Structures are given as structure tokens and as C-alpha cells.
Length: 186
Image (cartoon, rainbow, N blue to C red; front, side):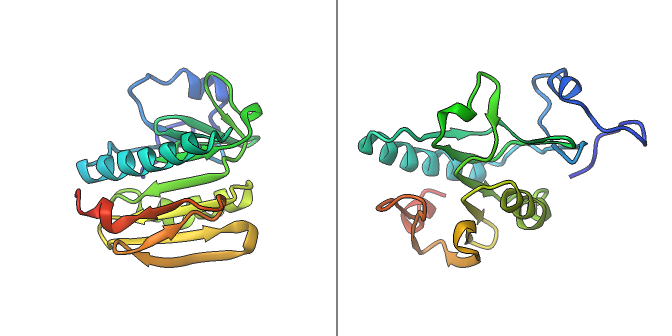
């Protein structure tokens, strides 16, 4: 993702970020603003199906956790400013939520890889999500038809699965996602 132009010695502030046009999709890593591409059709189908499955589970359990999808900001750090827009996230602590964003780490994040976001999802976001306290992070890669599960609390990184797998969500006792069923819709 290309960094957006700023003066060479400056980092973007929260006020500058909030003043961006509404149709501009961007994230901030350590004060550096990064442009985001629009998602593809496959990305949208995956996002919708995963969101629906997680939402249905949470609703059936009467859980306090909520699922959100992009674009919804997550402010991981104030100084230097770090704001991301995960494709999907689950937040179980409602005190982290305000009208604009999640302030602090969500419990569970799913990123759906696109050609332009691969290095961000596999490397940069893995680092930031682990560093700032996300409990579980999935990287769903439709090109490779793979899913990498990261259970940070257990120090288990990049557990590989395929689109034929049924995968248990680690932060919930009985939630599984059937990727074979979802991939049939692609």
C-alpha cells in the first residue's frame, strides 16, 4: 500500500486523520498514513459470509461480544498514532467502543488478503495485532485458498488451513467456521 503524501518530518495526527474525506480508505501505522484499495467481489462475499456466521453465533449465545466489518476504525495506539480498519473484528469489551471506533485491541480479527494488501496482512498487521493485544487473528487468503490462524495468547502463530477446512474459533468454546461451505459461494 502506498503511503499518502505528508511532509517528510511529520506524522499524521488524530485530528488530521478524522478530517480525511469520508470516501478515502486509509490506515495509519506509527503516524504514517497508508492508502487502502477497494475490496473485490470475492473479498466482499467472504467478508459477508464470515460476518454472518459470527453474528449468528454471538446472537444465539446472547453474548456481549459484537462483530464489526470494515470500514470501522480501531485505534491501537495514540503516540505514534496507529489506526487500522480490519475486514472483520469481534469486540467483547463494550467500554472500548465509542461512536467513531474501537479504542484498543479487538478480541478477534479477520483480514481477507487482496493482491495489494498481502504484505500488510501477513507481516505488518500480524506484528501490530500481536503487539497491541489482539487475542486471535486470522489471515484469509482467497488467492491461495488458505487460512492462517494466530492464537496470540497461546503463542501459536500461522497455523495453516485450507478452504476445505472447518476451523474452530479459539476465543469461543463452540464456534466453528466451515470454509468448504463458504468457498462454494465464491
